[in-house]
Length: 368
Image 1 (cartoon, rainbow, N blue to C red):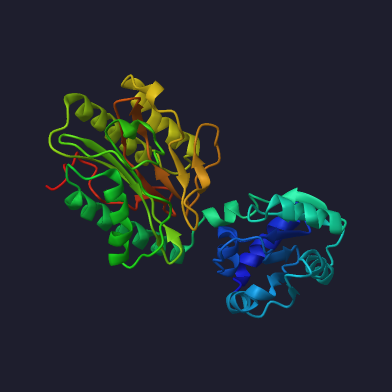
Image 2 (image 1 turned 90 degrees about the vertical axis):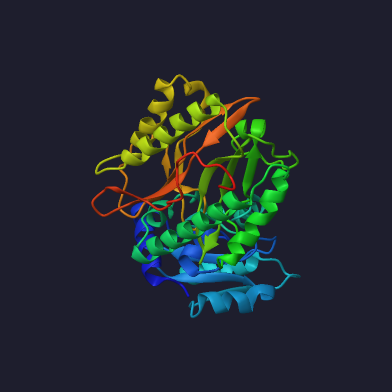
């Protein structure tokens, strides 16, 4: 059902920004407001929220039952059939809300071609609405935080199973294929993202997407994975070993472990995303590996695996209670290996940080 208190907060934001309405296409924004997780395709559907908190729902007849079941008693459904196109229905909805000719924002669940079709069918000022719900979504309430805790407990269990499962001689894709099975054993059937299994020199690519390398003896493996528990994402990274790591591997692992701990420790009253980034990054710079850490320290996590707030230089907005984000520094040596350790952290009411992941950050060998 439409979450009325969230709609009211959004309407207040629209009024503050001088906007008449926000149209929300299929996206995690739509899940947040209306609980609708709908597969995006070319048929336009979604929800418009006006500055007075009134709504209309866009629905092709093909999806009407699904959308009515999700949204419930929305005052106006703008229905359309495949043969007639959607622009007439969109205009009828805007007329119902009285926003024709107004300033209408669109979120990132709307295709550019559909926005152009709307632009050509009725007068309006189109506005980028990608961040209108970001602040609201970033401050999780108590129920959301408990779902995030459970989601993180589950991914920790999956990492523990992977630590027992991985052996030399397996291909990276053999490990990646097992990850959804382990999640399903814990009651989670949807991944937050395609898991990363990067062994040996492949670990120097933070978002490596291959899978053919055979894991060797005395090897190093980055595992980056997450699942969606009751819509809320987990996201964690651990770097594991087979056999005996080299002295260089052990040295860099310890640097990254200290960096990750420093990032978590920087979450305190008044801290900003920039402060967290700097605290973690400085450890790596001081150790002489600054050039091998070239991305932000973290990102918000919730219904989406990447959302506000971001732990990055230039983000000087103080962290707020209910924020949940990753702290995931890494060192990536091209052609050799990489190390990354990632926990999610929630901001408590007093401004301190609560780590949501608890799988050990100590150097761990598979099979032990």
